[in-house]
Length: 433
Image (tube, rainbow, N blue to C red; front, side):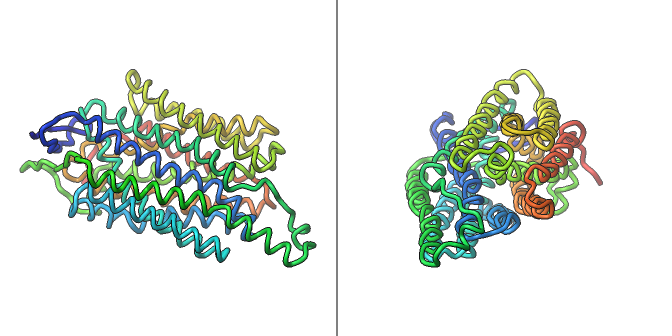
């Protein structure tokens, strides 16, 4: 049976659903992917302070963890789109899961050798798998159902990404972070054998969580292999505009969305990457307590996704995006100039308000692209490279400011101003040229 679905009012696809039009099980399977890649991303927020300690890094070097993951999005976005067109969404999802798992298993030799470069390579492989998954799952979730519920559906699926934002810091605190920190002076005073044992122990703590994660990914890939998913095929019309990879940017709202997504991902990664450090420095919390507060941040992020999905029943998506951007800008100012625990509360508030931004920008960006949805999705996934570039800039700024973590939060503030421009003006659908 063939069912026609849309994103917005102009994106038509043909969903081959076999003998049933029930999308519940396919949607549940797709939603599980949002949780899994959310776990990977939010464990990075634990890895940054942890490997900074284990591998004796500065702030800028520690942000290469983000660079390794998110640079993979830039490299793999086009191949991921080609993979989807050639082999379909189901096979692409299975491939993404297996690549993701391979990167997770590479954490074992990286930890055994305490080699930071091998950790970075492992994270790059994970990023390649995540790119394939996100390029596949985001448009699939948006289109798997009635057109008027596209943004709501994508936000609902992304809410489970928010669940991972809460769960990952708790897992990281329990199984990765030791709670033991030594100053450079204390490390220098240690006998060499004791220092080596301490640093190797810190590095080794990542092995079990990533072995478990990789095993779960393999099991999910097997489940996808045996489950039926409706195939999604574009319906072409004679009058349809079908620009190439670069000329698709003549859709102005897509171009704006690519820019907005670049700065959104950069802002989110900046905030979470330095959350534990700012909690320690600004609020005087210890490492494990800071990680639990990061879990609270994740809970607020998840709550924001569910509540935002509810509000989308009554408020236009671009209006809600703009309101949330304004709130995030004000809270960034509190994070920069506040003192004590109020800084942590401000960051938690930012987590709540930026929760709907990624899926909303994505949905607005692919609205009306018709058969160019795969190409537009590749551009939006490539823009995730903002998560590789902006945290590195933030780490550099913090080092220049003599490890003043709060000063670095000017970068996410600027990002939210740019996203606000997209919400107010850039989302409007205009074809340039």
